[in-house]
Amino acid sequence: MRAYVELVRAPAALSVLGDTLAGAAASGNPLGGRRLALPLASVAFYWSGMALNDWSDRALDARERPERPIPSGRISPNQALAVAGGLTAAGLALAAYSKSLKAAVPLAAAVWAYDLVLKSTVAGPAGMALCRGLDVMLGAGGARSALPAATVVAGHTLGLTALSRGEVHGASDIVAKAALTGTAVATTAAVVGKSASWRHRLGAVAFGGMYAANVGYAQLAATKDPSGPTVRKATVAGIHGMVPLQAALAARRGSLLGAGLLSAALPLARKLAKKVSPT
Image 1 (tube, rainbow, N blue to C red):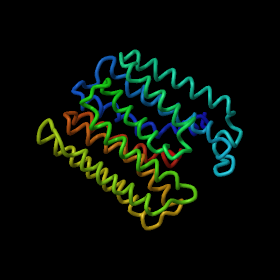
Image 2 (cartoon, rainbow, N blue to C red):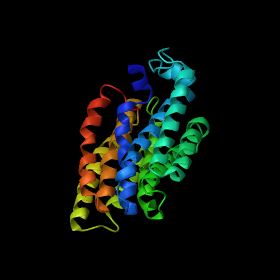
Image 3 (spheres, one colour):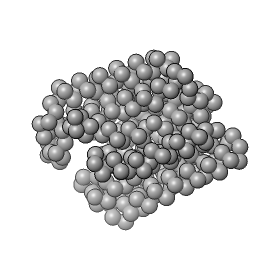
């Protein structure tokens, strides 16, 4: 069981629950009834992508990360591929139950395209950013009013993914500085714009500040020392930083309660990351 938990980076799924919450708040269609299954659909797609990632990277991991489930022999490549396929089917089924299948199909396609085609190319970071943007749109049911929120999450993901490519051998300081700049832009975009009320604006500023402090500090360190270990810490901070960023977006558009509940996932995610690496 632990091998499968490591394969899908199970605890890291806490960082995707807020995508659909942010999308739902931005679209004015809060999660409720059958739509409460959408965060679970996001988790299924995320886990499927992680399993597919390890299947695709099995030769590389044999050299760089032999402790991973596939190269260590704890899970076979065929088992990993079956997990990826089964979780994708589960995500689509949950989206269909929530009457959001049309928004889920492009997301599923983007996840598979990233892991099988785009990941090792220059388009890799953009492909991952597209996946997270589409995940926000899943919560919005495809409503265009959620495009700004989806763009903010996608922008953060773009910088995070580009920087994460150096978590083994190190990155360039230019990439680290670009990621840090992207964090500043994402913070600003998350707290400005239309707000439900001054209370919701205040909540957005609080969560946005939390995001900027946690992610920005780690990325600033990477600009000074872009070695593998420092970049990996910045990558982990960027993954966990999704939570306060999503909370800021949701709070500003009227979901203060949801944002507060979502923020409770952050300390849990950090604690579990010590047991199962999210990268």
